[in-house]
Each structure stands twice: as C-alpha cells, then as structure tokens.
Image (cartoon, rainbow, N blue to C red; front, side, top):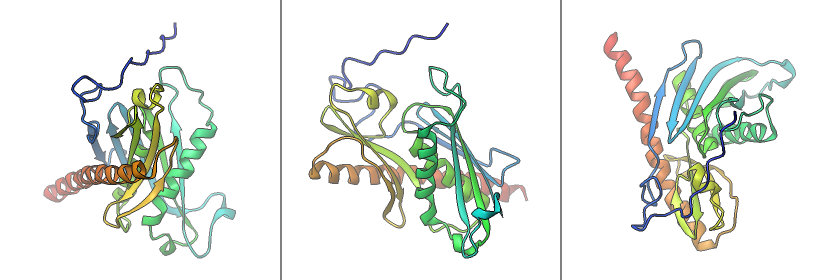
Length: 250
C-alpha cells in the first residue's frame, strides 16, 4: 500500500522566528561529506545534506565513448545525474526524465570552470551521481558531491565548487531551502540554487524560480555566498580527513 503524502505545515516559521527544523534564517542543514567511498572509482564522495543522501563516482581522464564526441584541443566533462526509484516517497520511474537530464547539464556547467580540461585533449572525465534520498536542494548537493569526487581523483582544479540554495518564503530570505519549505506555497516561495567558487569569489551556477526585487536579489547573493563558504569548509575538511589519514598510514 502506498504511503499517504505528507501534509504541508500551516506555517513555515515558529513564534520565535526560527524555522520548523529549528534553524535560523542563515543556517545550513546538517552537512557531512566523505570522500573515497567507492573503491572502484578514481574519485568519489558521499554528501549527507539534511535528509539528502547523494553519492558521486568520478572516472578518468579516459578515452571518450562514443569517439565522435572527443575534442582534439580539450577534454570534456560528462555528468550523469540519476534519482534512485526509492529516493522519494512515491516510487520514481527508473527511466531518466527531463529534470534529470537538465540537472546533469547544469551540474556539468557548474563544475567545468574549475577544471583544466585543455590539459586532457581527446579524453573525458565522467561523473555518475545517484540520489539515494531526496529532501530538496539535490542539484546543489550534487554539485558539492561532484566537485569533491573530482578533487578526490587528484587532478588539478582551480577551486572547489560548493552548491547551496537560498530562497524567499513568506517574504523572508532564508538559506538552504528544505523540501517542505520549497513546496510551501502560501508565501509564494522563490528558490535560487547557486554554485559558488569561494576562492575565485565567483558563481558558476545561478538559477532563479520566482519573483524578487533587486534589493532582495542582492541580499540573497550575500547570504548564499556566506553559505557557500560553509559548504566549502566541509569539502576541505572531508579531503583533509582522507588524505591526512593515508599519510599517517604510510
């Protein structure tokens, strides 16, 4: 028997101004990252962001298949984003949908600016992302996971890329929008997924769904950059944890 859909709350903020899960407007959900979790991948990462569980495996640089996609002057990055059939409450079709294809492209565009693909002509870097559990913000968490998996491969990168979303709910700007907050419609929710290159002080992804004023847009950019820095610190922590442990074992 299928589970009944979980009803949305009457309000998205508590009387003390905090959100339903107790977070302040500028707080991330719990975030934990592990790298090197897949033995058969050249690089891999597991991102646990809120209730999201996302795993990424990276391979390459290697020969391009099919060969006609190869470029003689540069390498290419190919991203495959998939949601497991059990990742959401109602069973998802195993056939890749339009949204999965769009997110695959978006994650690739967010990661490409930090790679030296010109150093790897006629080759590809393939990243396979699987969403095990979805709870809102999977494209941002996928950017975070893909960047960590590629860094775990050991190839040069200009920067890490941190994914985080900011939104406007009930006319209030909040960081790291959860699934319930994203679906809460009474306040006219606005969602803005962003990928941040912290050291470069640049954005490699910015999408906007909803309407905001110029002042609100500037406020959201400031808030999401601060959130990106928090994600970036977790990425560095995960990479240090793996490689410092390996160094001790030698």
